[in-house]
Image (cartoon, rainbow, N blue to C red; front, side, top):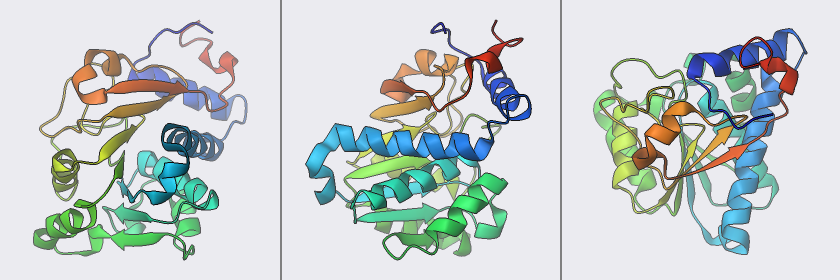
Length: 232
């Protein structure tokens, strides 16, 4: 497999081939992505991770779902100071994979959950600020590669607050608000210390280095044959 970067559309087709042709379900891809994210943090911070406050900011798509899984794996590794901020109401989670993983973590007493989407719009920014102001690590699971149009509340406030934070910011797959193909930022865009992206480099990450920080590519079990007809 070459190291060729892909567009958002190409990555979607590769994932679709993985699921429809090979039976590699997106739920498995999400599990592997979240596991790789947790492993990255465990390697990056070592034993010191147990002393860090981790805040995961999650939107309503599969990017948020990847982050739910990462938090579950961190909790399984005895990392205890984790807060999950869900920016939408649980019923507004857009994919079955994200809903399945939310239903797992909502039963976990070891994880603090704050449903920001249930607050009035004027209060959402305050809630996000209160939870992130003393964070050591923030996981950016706000928006993934499907970002389109202007970013609105409470997602806009979430990006503002994580950019204002002194925490180490790890973007999941792509910094929220960065176009994964062109590298152009939206009206708001995460400025990450590092980005962990899956299967292949996204073209926009190379162009938008200012926002991505150091980029780490992790494989999530998609068969290389799923690229046939897309890249090969």
